[in-house]
Image (tube, rainbow, N blue to C red; front, side):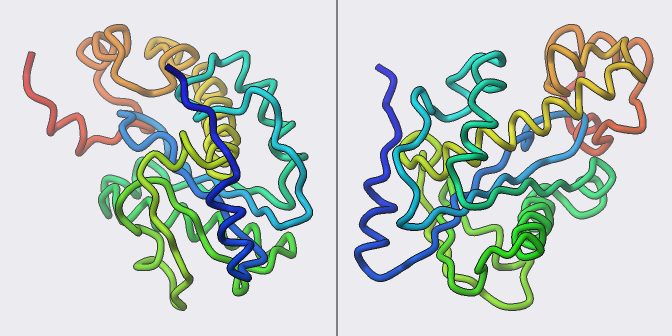
Length: 215
């Protein structure tokens, strides 16, 4: 059974006097190549019903995500995606890079005029990776399966997924043998076979390849 997201938690937060909520989700955490992305959406009490068919991005086809992403961006007050590169993941580790990508998304929101200091962040998962990367702490609520249950987080998931997928499709033209247009940098059989045959590209997370067991 597919669970549809709601605005129940966001509405409860609004009723507690929190005017601005930032839905937050990461994409590309488990990929072998390409950046990790953190998407953020800002909503307030002025937003209406969220786009029909909105789901956690993992539950949607690529075509449906492409259709929903602009609708999500129009529904929210602001949206942004922050990235951390494969080189940064190798140098700093994935958890630190989630925070770095999140900080970059927050900076983009700030530059767009979003009231960051007056917002509460609703973050998918069970760990606050964001505040360790910030100079000033922000209120963060972690929510397991937030991308499934909370519309603001689901919208952030879709926007970030489409953004990162388009980047990897673009990189496919430079490195077509790895099949990134279809696998988006994840460990498909085609991708693993190409790494075995050709070795890693500059966009691979080399520490992750070294950590994989030999086949």
